[in-house]
Image (tube, rainbow over all chains, first blue to last red; front, top):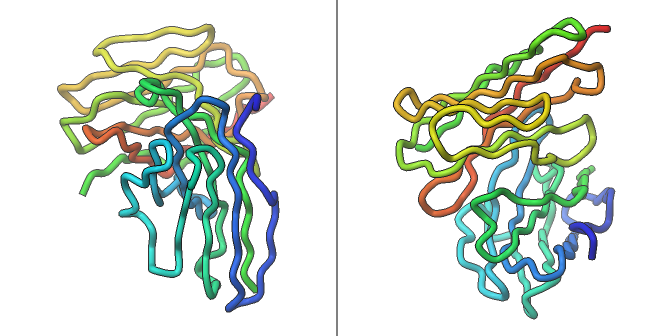
Length: 115
Length: 110
C-alpha cells in the first residue's frame, strides 16, 4: 500500500476485555515496529519484527501484550484483559530493507480507551 | 538507561522568525538522529535525519549535530503558523532502536 495502515482508528474497550489492533505496513517493508504513546509523551518502544521474526519484544509491558506477524506482512498487537493504564495511542511503523537508519514511516495509530 | 531530553515547552515564536529546538542524548554509541513533527491527534511525521557532525539543510529546516557535546538541534527559518506542532527528537542506538524524547511543543504566533 501507499502508507502504513492501522485499524481500528479508535477503540473503546471495557476493562477486562481483549482487543486486537491491526497494522498493514508499506509493501516491501521488512521491518515493523509497535510503539505506545501516552498523552504528552514520546512514543515508547513495544516490539520489533523483521519479516515474520519477532527480534525484540523487550518493550511489551506485561504478558497481557502479544504481537505477531505470521506471514511477514500484516501484524496484530493483542492486549488481553485490558486495564485502564493500557489507554494510549498505539503506533505502528515500518521501514524498508536497509532503510531503518533513515527513519520509519508511521501509521495513523489506534487510540485505545479502556473504560 | 539511554535517554533523550527535550524541553517540553511550549516554545512561542513570532511568525517569520527562526524557531530553535534542542535535544540532548546520553548514549555515545548513537548512530542516527531524527526530527519528527507531530500535529495534535496525528502520528509522527519524519522531517529530517542526520548522522554526520555539522549542519544539514532541507528547505526551511536545518538539523545540527554535535556528537562531542551529544547535542542535536532543529532550526526552522521563516516560521509559519502551520509549523505549530510538537517536535520529537529520536536517536537510533547501536541496536537500530529509536529512543525518543518527550517532544517540544512549538507555537508560531501570527
